[in-house]
Image (cartoon, rainbow, N blue to C red; front, side):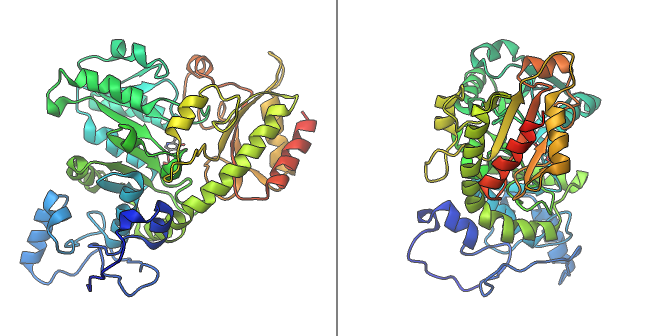
Length: 434
Ligand SMILES: Cc1ncc(COP(=O)(O)O)c(C=O)c1O
């Protein structure tokens, strides 16, 4: 590879520019003469000698593999692969981590982060509301491995220390929370963990894990705010177009070995074709898409706020957002501008005992609207609507949902790139019908 002498360091360019051009050079692959990074599709790699094969196995997932100066020795896709490697370099850069490891889905990433950090007899303490499958993974599957999940109120960080036992190894939460859009103060949770860690050995440290799916690194970088690990579904706004599934763990290099081994042995690898789509189409357009979707989300939020059939709207960009000060501190673009994201949650007025107005509205939109689609998933260029209480969060117990802001009249809206007038008009017409 010819080493070019750039007249500015890559840190001097904005993240937006960086994610379009990628790394100046990649140790993963020499693509110096490609304008667009190439795609590699090979499950196995030719080894020029047995010795090279043995060295490849020896170096796999090791610190030396990261720093030995030569290209990684590729052996088999499930171990390591160049296109995914190039995506990982850029994801690590975007999240501000030493490393990023990409998985087949967001849930595979959650599993890898928890599975790498936790051992039999330890426990994860999570916020009361987490994505339904994360809740199910914690309550149905981790106990089979002797790992317990408990839930606590992370809004009250002052009461968290009372919930932490000597077995608690991980503090886990989403912010913004799916679907309520409430925020958890990452730095405040970090401070709680630091206090506990004063009395713990290094290998036993309490870890802070944040699911950054709703914000994406364009709107929030939890590692910079004190998280030890970030997990994220790449299926959403990073993939951006709704064509590929993926997941990510970004963290310090101390965790690289475990995360890679977990992926090798449990097998949830991100395939090269999806990695390429995310690298070439997803990451490169993330800043532009999020900035535009965010502008529309603000307008839609303001429209819904004024509507007489709407009880309340939860969107960090609104003046009435109860955690406005925290939003302005925590949700920032890489250039430091307020970045409340593209997700909204709103609750319709309803009457107890009567059929839910939210269900009526969502069904009406599903049948009559062109710019709004009833579908799960989020963060893509199409505006998507869903009813979390009966769909994405149905795994959570009713009392838990109601106590922490989820409501049968609640609706989640993932704002896309359509003309904002169309989205508001479709909502307006549908609201007339409930
Ligand atoms: C907050 C959050 N985390 C994790 C996931 C899981 O991601 P995936 O569907 O890519 O497995 C989702 C999916 O909706 C999510 O909303």
